[in-house]
Length: 218
Image (spheres, one colour):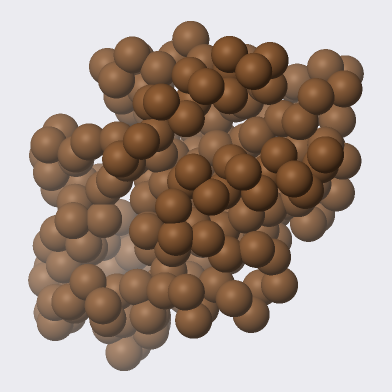
């Protein structure tokens, strides 16, 4: 059975940190929070999102405040992300992996109904066996979604020969829960200093991530 890659979307295949930061700062403003710089965001970011908001704002948002934060973020991100591009080299890496006979899929915590047209618009849908986005609340973690994602791909995909490539510690924690491997990319939501303690390989480019995926399961 060949190596399978599960790609993350936001901050990994999609180079969208400017949009994420702009949307986050817009959300913070509605509850009186101060804006963050990109460096501050990447140093503070963590999942689940309510814990990150607590750190960034300095207080625990109420239920009503959380609803306002989330709605504002989603609306502003939708506006800003239209100008985002794929991470440099990503289309070529996806095509090359498929040409080698490797399989790959996409799992994101971005809303499913918004993820699908975004992937289609970039012309890369054909490279994936499956594309899954978030269908539940926006403040969850990825592990349960990865369990469902791999179950849907069974028996063609073996978790033990699967590598999750993402930009957040949560990607590695999800992989660990299902018995898969992970490689974390520093170009997204976390700094290298926050990724390295997770205990999986950390790389500065998607090309390095793919090469490691090949070696890890080879």
